[in-house]
Image 1 (tube, rainbow, N blue to C red):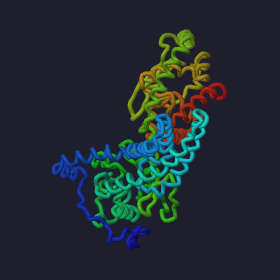
Image 2: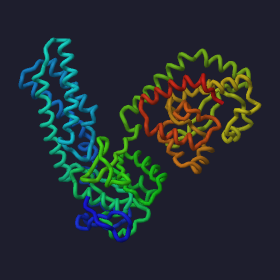
Image 3: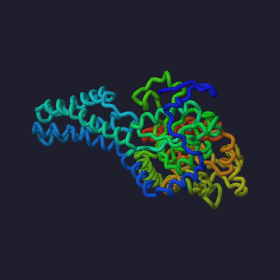
Length: 488
């Protein structure tokens, strides 16, 4: 990364010799209207290209791996069974080994050690299976697959780099921070178009010299979502602006809702080691943040699991539900089910259902009373239900309706959501996903009258690190905690 000292700011500044041509600084909406009026058809084609060719890199590489298995099989006339088995194993290993993921820098030499490792694993597995099943080891086929994979990937990587450099496959990119680091990133992208990232503007609240910047300032941090929608940006690079870490985290989380890949420039890029889980453009390391869980295919499986598990639980627990309803009716009178307005995903209100523990004086009391665990009006049945969390079983119907999930941040009442949103950083970020019957915070004892800031941290940790297995682990620990750590 070619840089020079900036006399106006501490740090590194881009070399003027390689700055891209400066554009006029206009309001986002005005610039977008001008662009659309000039070339609507071209804009449609460009957006279509972003959403198809760029997103199908993994499919293209997988197709190349299939071809690399079929070519040597055809040349040496291997049977259909051996060909099919070799293809399935090798293509699967290449995908699981991370070789089909979207990357800014594509190089067969960089990938060669991983390709050889995966090839050895696949070859060993298939040789053992072949020996056990047919007694015939297809060594010739295995030896032919490796050079075929390397050769075909060399061609595909070259084509993709060429298409990116020619601008046929590019991703409009927003850079957060117009300081020396941000300008250096823009310069690096302009010198390495083969990365596929094309910087179109900065996000910065206080740029030092907007007129001298290589690309325009499109808005402030609070306007990022609008800028992403207006410009159809597909990538965001965080390059250390003037924002504090808390605001940066919130901003990045919002940007991930816009189908945008997020990269972070390390604090000390000059001494950062580029590992296998990082990207780089030239000599600039970039940390690619994990794509939000709710944008992954497995997130759809989560909903299927919710429906199947909640429906099954309603059937199995129906006798218990009926018994609890009778006991609640006996203790509190008419109105077995208590309905209360809660805030769910994206701030949408819904009616949460519980077995009634007591009857509030009025609606205001139920919406603003934080905890009733020590309320003398709670009878013996109500206390048992609350201690065992059995009062929450009607929420299985909320899950069936799609208001909630089995696992997620616990939903809160609008009165407290408004208060906590002002008091605790990151509280609103909990509403990125459906709320849940149980959650990561709950199995760690954060329920009832416990610190809200800790709940926020645990809930957001769950969202950032979500996997199907994490949900299953939380459900299993919930069952244990019902007996070992009773509720309030």
